[in-house]
Length: 74
Image (cartoon, rainbow, N blue to C red; front, side):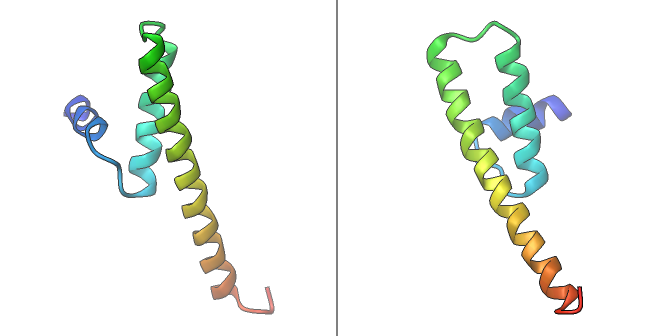
């Protein structure tokens, strides 16, 4: 079932942090397999870079929410 989820995910842009992280993991595994043609490797690299930036933005947003919840005494 997990493999079918990953296949479905490769055709759509993941939404949440965990889904993005899973997709990045799948991209890394595919690139490390050594069975990827150059054009596909570039496509995967770009997708991974975009997902990594999105994850970073989500983490920064989460940190800001935590900081706000802690208040000025933190």
